[in-house]
Image (cartoon, rainbow, N blue to C red; front, side):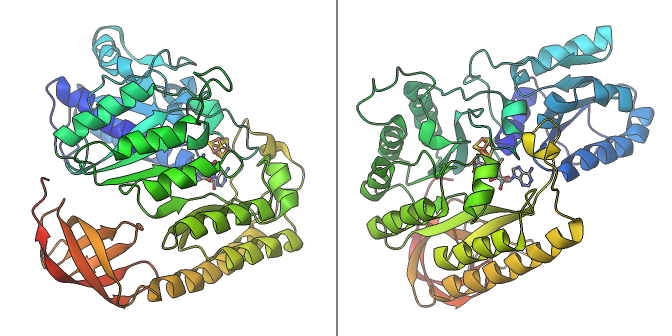
Length: 434
Ligand code: SAM
Ligand code: SF4
C-alpha cells in the first residue's frame, strides 16, 4: 500500500513537470514516504532526516517532504525534531501535496495530517515502476482493531472504492499494456461493506470484483492481498477457481497458531477454522501456493503458545512466510499489555520459526522440480546474462535467457532453492506488450 502511494507521489510530481533522479544533490524535492508498522521504521526516518540535513544546508531551495504513516503518526514532532523538513503530509492528504509544496515556498513549513479521506483520489496519476504490472488499491483503511496493529490509527477506517471506479482504472491500465494487477486492501473480504446496506448485495462484492477484473481484456494475471481468515467466504474460493486469470496463490495471514494468542490479538478466527479454510482452498485449487504472516513474541505468548504456532506451520505447509518479531506500537492496545516477552526469548523463538519455515519452504520448492510453468519476466540481472521471472504461484524463477520484462514464457524447472527456482525455456516466449 505504501509503495503504491509512492507511485502516486511520483506521478503527482511528474505531472507537475519534475523528473526522477538518483542524485540527492540534483533533487529539488525529496519525499520520504514512510511506514509505521514496526518500530525500526521510526528509527530509519529520523536517521534519514539527519543525513539530509547537510544536503539541505548545501541547497536551501531543496524541499524535503515526509509523507505516509509516520507523518500521520508523528505529525508536528517531525518538524520539531527536524526543522529542515518543509512539508509533512499524512495518509489522507496526499492529493494536496503540490499545494503544500507551493505554500511552503511563500509561507514556510507546512503540515496536513487531516484525519479522514474525503474521496479516494482515483484521478491522481501514478508513476508505476513497471509497465506490465500494477497495484490497484480497492479499499484503503481498516475497520478491524487487531491489538498489535497501528494501521487503523494511521490509515483510518475502510473506504471502499466503487466497483466501476476500480474497473475503469484496470481497463485504463490494460489499454496501456499492463498484464498483471494486484488488488490491495487490508481486508479484501470486507470490500464494499462500508458502502452497501448489509445484505443488499446478493453476492459479497469481493468475489464479484475478482471475476469482473479477471474478465478485462488484456489482463492475464490477477492477484490480491490480503484476505482475512475471519471474513473469508466460499464464494471467493469459487471466484478464484473459476476465473482463469486469478493466480494460484493466496496470501493468508495466520499471525499465531495459538487460540489464546489469537484471542488476545483480537483476530476472531481460531486455528482449526484457519486450517479448515486452507483445506477447502487447496481442495478447490490443488496447485495453489500459500504464503502467510506470523508474529512471534506477542505479549503473553508462552512457550506452549509458540509450540502451537510451530504445529500450525507444520500442518499448513506454507510455501513462504513473512515472519515478524512483535513490535509494540504506540496507541495500540497490545503496547500496554503487561506481559511483554523478553527480547532474547523472542529472538530464540523467531530463529526456531524461521528454521522450520525454511525447511518447509525448501521442500515445497523442491516439489516443483521438472514442472513446466508459465512465467512472466520481471527484469534482468545487473550483468545482463539472466532474467528473473515469476510463476502464477508467485515463485521466483531465474532463467539463463535474457528476455524483455513483461514477456510471458513457458519454462521447465531444472533446479530449486528455498526462495527461488531455476528454469529453462521450453517454448519461445510470446511477444507481449511491455
Ligand atoms: N491487513 C493484514 C492482515 O490483517 O493480515 C495485515 C497488514 S499489516 C500491514 C502486515 C503484517 O505486519 C501483519 O500481517 C502482521 O503480521 C505484521 N505486523 C503488524 N503489526 C505488527 C507489530 N506491531 N509487530 C510485528 N508485526 C506486525
Ligand atoms: Fe491491522 Fe488487523 Fe486491520 Fe490487518 S486487519 S490492517 S492486522 S487491524
